[in-house]
Image (cartoon, rainbow, N blue to C red; front, top):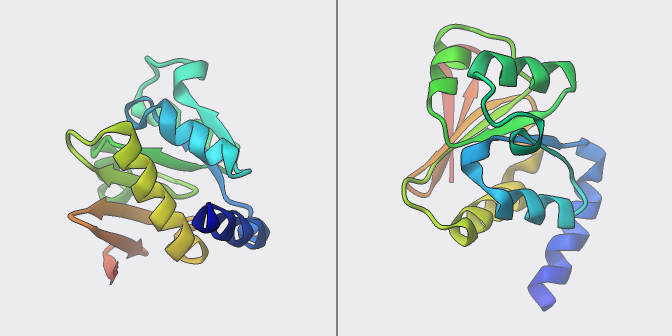
Length: 142
């Protein structure tokens, strides 16, 4: 219980960062619920239209200034390689992860890097978060 209180206190301070999320279908309901419980603004593709194509999902994220959380690596092609506009993308490369495992990863990313991920293209894979700056530069965060 003590760590939960510490995380909530930290997230309250992070409210100044104004992180808001659009959660893609593959990420799952547990991550959506966790973020909402922590007080973040969350919209879920599952409730908008689970059949939306990736370009339309990005359009929604940009128009509402939401950071997209997804498991779909096609967003890497759209954003990083094709240069589509975005307001932050977090790709979780967590093949076969359970909902609880995804929640733990998101919790760690937000608690450690919330001040660095806003409006950035990020990929979490193999226990590491890669943060892309600009179009071709990158910084590895641990």
